[in-house]
Amino acid sequence: MKKILVTSLMVISILSADSNITIIEKASNIVDDIGEKSSNIIESIKDTTTKLLDDNKTIEIDAMSLYNKCKGCHGSDGKIKALNKSPIIASQNVDDIISKLKAYKLGELNNYGMGRLMTTQTEDLTIAQIEALAKYISKL
Image (cartoon, rainbow, N blue to C red; front, side, top):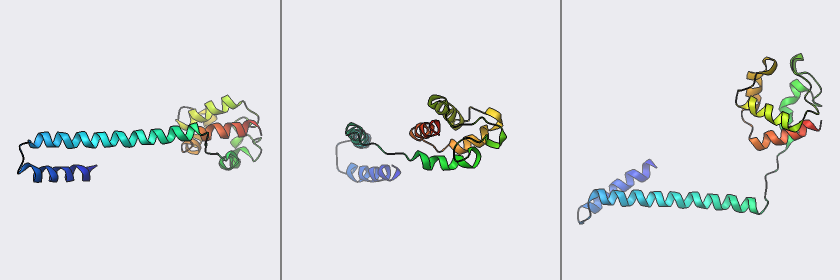
């Protein structure tokens, strides 16, 4: 963006020498043009995203691979009390798991003194990944 503004100012300087339009008018026109082009780019991205959603093209999330991070504390089957503190997570309700994982991700939950550890484990997960992981855990 900085390069665009610098270039714009250079063009304004060159054009202002032999024109009846003031520098402020020229600058205003260039800023408007930049804004319009930015809006067009944003609309294009929105259109592409909508088309992908409309075409039912979804990104598949490998919940089993996501769970690999959890195995060290919760066990490969989710039936180990993490650090002998937390309840067994296998077969818990999907919505409860989602709610807890989201709260841990945001640093708003500290059940059994595990808040900081769980925040670290969940902070990079997207909402879609949390939902896929919760469904996987609920079926263990």
